[in-house]
Length: 271
Image (cartoon, rainbow, N blue to C red):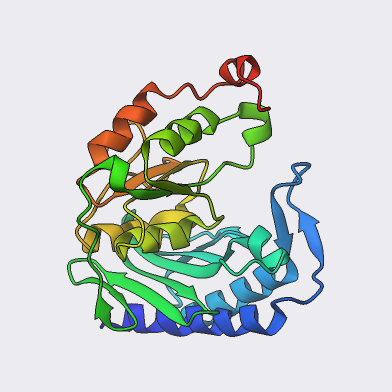
């Protein structure tokens, strides 16, 4: 394990201590915009300051891009992407599914990543070309080869009430997969695909800090990652499709034909 990954794990666990300290308490909740689905708490900002402080101490010349603080100026080939609390809505409701996600990107390609679940003390991590691990145990994607026997997961963008994105897709997968989960943390979902707990994941409207660490883990565990249109994955695509590789085409075919538009939803109102 190199110094990059060791420091990222140290920083993620420091954030995890803060997660546990404030978990279940009354929080000061603010909204990032008029959208009441996009919230932030004092824990988000405190964790991000803690993480970036640790990383900057060790790597002062690197660039830093945090969900709450934004993208800093810099010319280094290395950039740290920090999601200090992925699953803020869950955390604010004391729903136990959230994490700290940290990734190091070199020339826009993830080379190291950590996803730390403090409540379960599960530290998922990966290094480019060296595999993905959970608390020291090597991760492998699942061997399920049919969607009908798969447990898949997804999420909904903050703009879902305006766009209706993913409603038709969700319906299709509920009818065709063994099970579908929507549990509010893209970073954790991707780590679970790498660990074989989920067989596939798709989501649109997610950001680079949500998926940089997790997509690297999926690839290092033997899985496949593209964007939801089937094109090569890119951190700025704001979407991802990650699977064990065996069901990738089956999921893609549904997404390709999905009617992700408001007109469809208006013709098929929820009852």
